[in-house]
Length: 372
Image 1 (cartoon, rainbow, N blue to C red):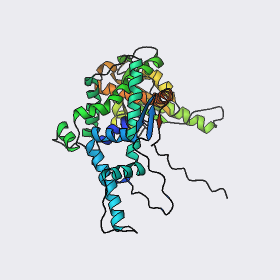
Image 2 (cartoon, one colour):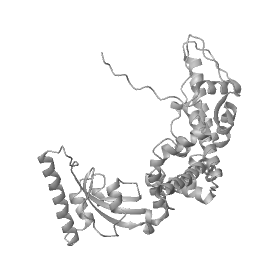
Image 3 (cartoon, helix red, strand yellow):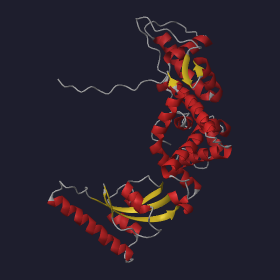
Image 4 (cartoon, rainbow, N blue to C red):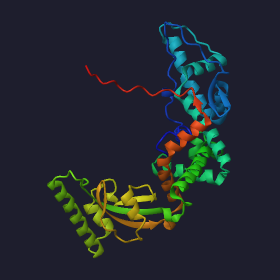
């Protein structure tokens, strides 16, 4: 849903819809080393903290077992399978392998598969967001959480992940999920949406209304910006692009061609030209400043004058006002707009909450450049 991590709040929801994915990568076999192995963490070892709340390995494992037992079982099956294979067929193979429950859990703590760190992050973020919501007197209803769930299910259905003819409940059952279980996962996502809306209202200086939403199409003629250092040829190319767009506008205004047809024929924005230049719904402040200023000063179905941005010259036309958009379209536009605020907002909350996750694995170092 979001650009930055909301690691397992947003990502956990996505992961839960992918329960059939291989977990092998999350459960690498324990390494066998001739050197003494590091001490295995105990169940009482603290692995995470948010505010004054500490979370131990035992807490995390219990959460996994109760919140998503099927996922936990799959994780342990992969982990124990790799352990058994190493014991039966590895360099020091044995005729049989036995393991107790406590030994299995110790193996889990020792191997620390990425899923455990991701799940811990989701718990920490959930507690952090609920605390912030309580401080700001923000409440979230089941209906609001269900709306976020329905949006995700709709996306899965559109992408073909949910087979045609299969109901949402049937799909969830096939993934060992329930709506009640999903509410627990999506609650932090919905809380975050509300918190970010509050941040957005600070940016706007007013409550978000229909006037802050729009759906528009555009026609783009690409040309680099003209600067004091531009050559005569570059200035000529700029003037030519402007003249071309003015001619296209004249044809549209005269009724010789529709805006959508002109976009398909002339626009150099390959991402939307085949769709008549449709940019979809978006919010105030989402586009680059000159484009944003122009589109939110337009009236519906009126073709703008050429608008200069760093990309070139645009013609813009509003196809739907905020009041004509569905609640789902506005929710998607809101989430896209909020993504630009997400990183800084989460970072500030994490700092206030003194959030720590000792299980998060560091990203691999980039390859070093050979300067020799």
